[in-house]
Length: 136
Image 1 (cartoon, rainbow, N blue to C red):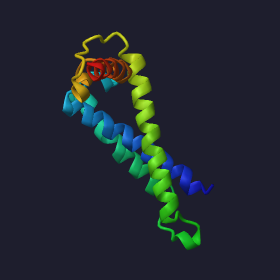
Image 2: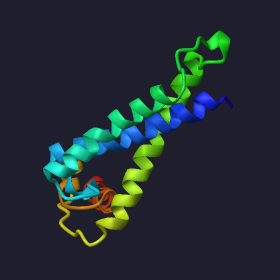
Image 3: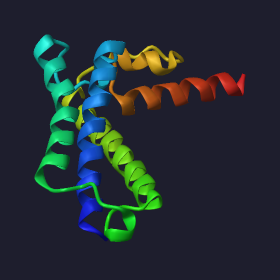
């Protein structure tokens, strides 16, 4: 594995966590927020992708062809996918632990149930709801 792959993975993961938090904040999905919505939290989550990009390009010369040791398109696509999945798993796991006391679940609400419940609780309630509806 090339050192660029690890650095690119960190860039994508950190940036995706910031983007997920911004999207949840502006979408009103409080169940997957790390901090309560505020201007300071929005500034922090907006600064996270920018800081990751600055770190990635300032620490080393990253403008290298894949023939000269840089990332090929396949490596970049795979690393991007794994980084985004890691960011999603981290976001869901951390916020499910931090917001474990949220109990405002409305069954069958789909994505909107994240406005008051953690991801795991919302999925559990929605699966139960749809299973009961399917059986009727």
